[in-house]
Length: 346
Ligand code: IMP
Ligand code: MG
Image (cartoon, rainbow, N blue to C red; front, side, top):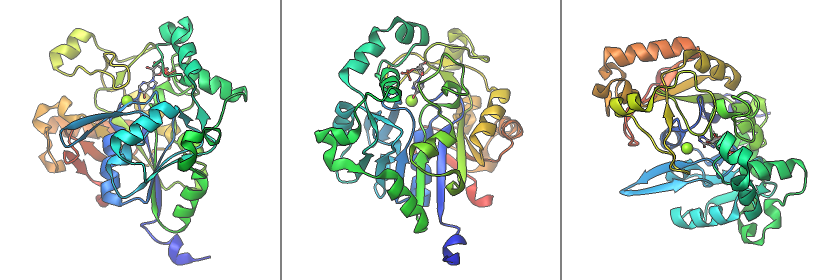
């Protein structure tokens, strides 16, 4: 056993997940952490192409659903873990669009979304209307996967050149002392197990699931960063305890629209009780808060903690009490540079 590797502080595997109902701004947190920590692999877990992430690269806005949002960091290999559903049409289009053909890989065991799954999702009164699904075929594809009738990524010729053993790659990188980021999608509140069933997605979304999606055992995870948004949002149907009226969010100037479906997001106030429960099940070692500039616009673009207003700092203090873990990343605006990073002070 090589103890110098065991003691190497740079060796780490970090999971980044959403703490509320999704769309917390995980993508930006992943991008920032990647630029700071230089991972060799960024691999995603989560459900599949129901996840939407908008990325600004220069002046161009990309909406990605299959490619890990960490693609903006150019020096990592990108992977899609075994647990994730792959829609080959969406995948190939995005790989082309964002230009990652030479550094993206898919696990051969990923379940495949067929056109027929999309039809079933969109044609189902239950899924489309009652649950408010994204209509991307994920629910029916996961159902077929459980029934053991679906195809896997290794059965699709168009994907042949991208196929790898993601768990083997990821665990080997960790053993070599490299840094790995495991990127979650969706959010805690729409977990199949722990969310507001039946108004949930078709799989668990917690940190343990993201590790399992990539074939990484619990003992190998060093950090779990749970991302919370100062004003949580929810798309689709289902309970939302702290929801405000559309009029109120309009008055506050904080309206939002979904990346995948363009639906207007429901917006609510900070939910301390949910944050605590979510941090517990996710095993949060740290938390990120996004959209602090919405709590107090005077914080827009601030990059030092001491420059935050008293109102914002009180908010963070309360959030830390709720989460019971330190808030180490505070996003103060949409751009990559608009962030406060306190991780080194831990
Ligand atoms: P499905 O995952 O498409 O079956 O949709 C089930 C529920 O999860 C719906 O309320 C969707 O709006 C929600 N959902 C699925 N993926 C995401 C996501 O990435 N962000 C936010 N909500 C999501
Ligand atoms: Mg999203």
